[in-house]
Length: 153
Image (tube, rainbow, N blue to C red; front, top):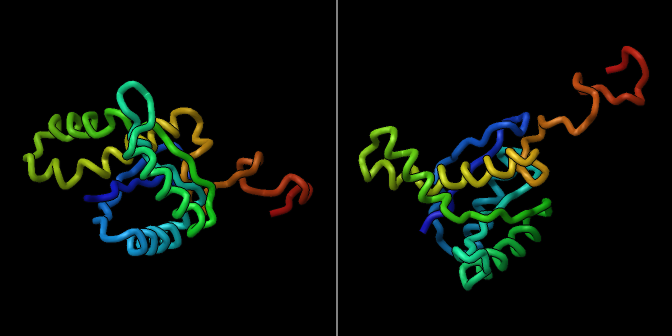
């Protein structure tokens, strides 16, 4: 099993797939994700939630929520869940359109699905999207604090 991974660009406009994380054990997975979060300076985390086609949460969704609780505690970051229904199917279709061989599609599918999930969050305005530290959460487009007065910065 693998964890598909994706991050947004600095502006929170586009999602980019990263190499998959091969699942080992929960402690090893948490450590690897913590290292990635630090390396990429991630500020928020979104986990794909595998809902049933009816929209209800089954056993896999409960497992993801348990892992999310551990991950949230370990990282100390805001964490949100996003419906991942059909994201793998969409990823497979996009990869097939590119004419990739089945083995290459399989290698890329989970992280592309993660990017598709993140794209859905970003399309809504990105409130729950992970952003690098360079994301400016200020009203002033040049990054200055409006309270610093004219010409400050």
